[in-house]
Image (cartoon, rainbow, N blue to C red; front, side):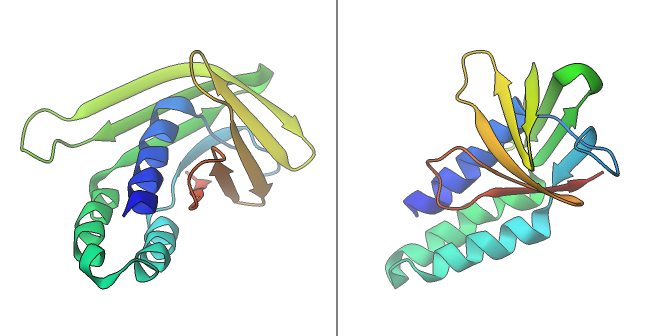
Length: 143
């Protein structure tokens, strides 16, 4: 469950900390690939003890309603947006941040003030990101 919580936390962090894509390079808009993320989280859940799997599955359901958008703009500017609906029915938690990004080969490093850098691997229409803490990476697809 700790890994699942970290994954969901990383998704929320990314939602608050990133930006997007373009067909031949990284610039442009990226959105969280929910299908890919669910598959990764489900693989992690299967590794948990049976008594913790049900709670982890419920928490993984957050991916269905989580919105994360990352925009990587020309000139190295990044914009991040996330929307996390309240589990208790209240107002959603919305996060918007601006930062910067740089490319080193097929690796993209996204930075935002007061946040740890997030490293992403670019593979065509997929951007796979990690903060170095969560066992499950965030996977983005071009919007």
